[in-house]
Image (tube, rainbow, N blue to C red):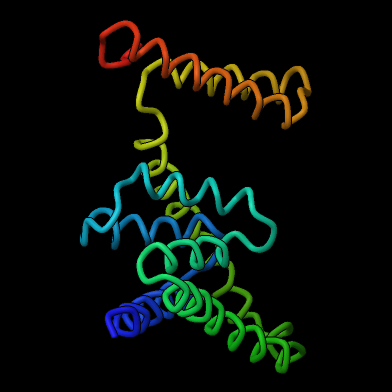
Length: 188
């Protein structure tokens, strides 16, 4: 019974997320950060970052993966499917509506202007999500150097992403050992 109540709560929350997730996956992270990390304190920002990292590495849509993983974390499989369906139902309805009336919408200047406004609103929401994730992503100051080096290697030297990920894993392991072995707090 507890799983059923939890699944219903998750379904309704993700239904709301699905209604307001414009601009891609980072928008859902901003909403989850506000609700689950800041307001309800159900998970930490580090746990949310871990969840999004796993969701990014899985095949399929990012938002669907995030919803499924969080729902499973909270209420097992009932919660996972409730979150997934809650997340995808609103966009499916909107897309069905827009597809059906596409020719009318495509020629309406007011509708196109409204969509431009939605795009403009998405940028700060995504920036807020990114900043929220960065707070939990870099527990040590040395992590900023690793991120800058990876960014430089990618943009200036065209290093393959696989090598960057492998290097990030190695750097994380080294930093973790240095933080524990040195007796400090890891604020290298």
